[in-house]
Image 1: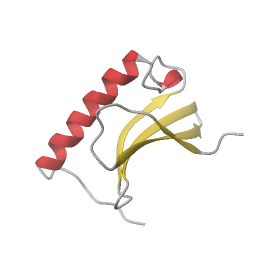
Image 2 (image 1 turned 90 degrees about the vertical axis):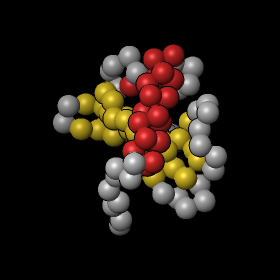
Image 3 (image 1 turned 120 degrees about the horizontal axis):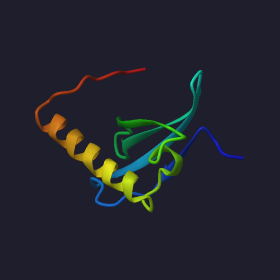
Image 4 (image 1 turned 180 degrees about the horizontal axis):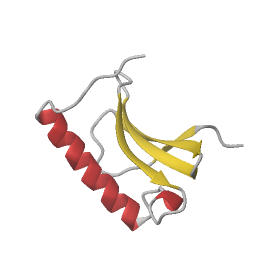
Amino acid sequence: MKGIFQPIKGKNLPSHSKLIKLYMTTILGARRAIFLVETTTEDGFFLMFRSKNDPIGENMTIKNTEFKSTLHHYLELLNEDLLNQNFEIFTA
């Protein structure tokens, strides 16, 4: 049985990081979210939220070229936001 999340493989990730795929159910149906987690601090960075029924959300693995391309785009955006200090911090 799957858990609520699972680590997934990625290429060219920042050092000391991993990708986590989070499974969700909403009123509109199944969804998936991807987070980049910095493993030394355990800080998480939200990258994307997709329907399970779209070409990216149905196969969120590095083998899916659409997912891989979109992931790299969002990693570039995250890097720019971090460099420009364009982010908010949420704590539990």
